[in-house]
Image 1 (spheres, rainbow, N blue to C red):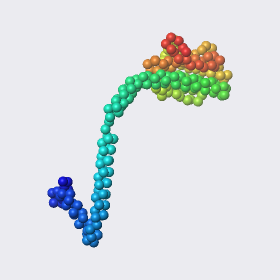
Image 2 (image 1 turned 90 degrees about the vertical axis):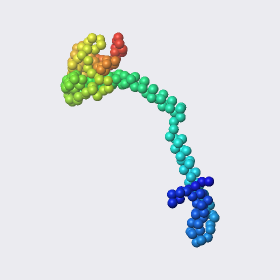
Image 3 (image 1 turned 120 degrees about the vertical axis):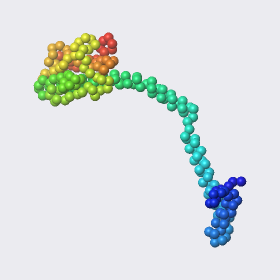
Image 4 (image 1 turned 30 degrees about the horizontal axis):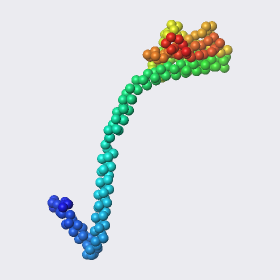
Length: 215
């Protein structure tokens, strides 16, 4: 038989608890016994217990991991661990490429400024600081440290040619050098090396070193 705690510290059988609830119901109804009220009280308690039982089962179910879920999580972690070094190397290579394209755009801008302002416009490399360059007319400075992979101006390209310290365009938009000049960019590990070529008529091109030649 099920027992319930009493105020005296002991336990009462379920039949006595039911009798007490009947008496309480008699008092509320002016001394008249109302069996419907007793049924209503017990039905409400029964529904509440069922609801609590369902919530507990749901919590137990939601808090656990199945073997399949654990295997999936482990597989994702392993893939992520193996993929991080390759992803890091990819971003290093992309940093040098983005810097080369930006430099080509800035050299084109210097050429257009020389034509529009009808005066020579120069771009100085490793000024005002290492791995920076500056436009002589608008004094715009770009720092290669903003690119991923430690992008820099190496002293020499992989083809053995020396990196230049200055590129200039005259008022006609032509290079002030009678021969092509070359600006080299590379990441810190030299996994990705780019050459920006500036030709006498003012043309500018970008090529990437493939290990044996430019392409």
